[in-house]
Image (cartoon, rainbow, N blue to C red):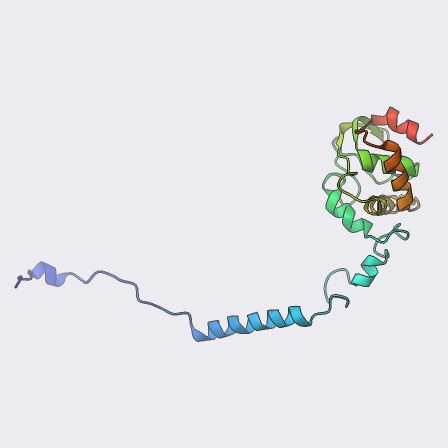
Length: 198
């Protein structure tokens, strides 16, 4: 038998971790929350007005009553604008000074329907003057990403928002411009776009 020295007797045993199970009330609470969540998903009716948020129902969103200037389109132009355009042109429509032109009080937005539709469909590159300020950048084309109805909804929204006061654009106008412009690339600034409005 091995002899234990006095120094060894003074030493404490090595620390170790005891097992501490999750308290039962925490497990019970998690289980109740899980049951409530599943029940809520199964029982909730998405066509009723939500307690929080903007208060629109699914019927209102699909009826085209969602955004100003969007009376003729069955899509929510404001939501599409937020998803596709607001990163550059900002939610306020003011753009970014020297980089992205404003849509609020823009002659291109309030002008000829065909011109605005052509810009959204095919994009623009080169020098573009908006409210007497020159911008030189690139706007992407959306003709491959958005349907005629979606482009009409966006165009209608921006023509009616931020005090622009222009009328909505029908999807038929987009369909005609899509055929007319075909597979062409982006428009080259002021000069080429000005010819569309004539």
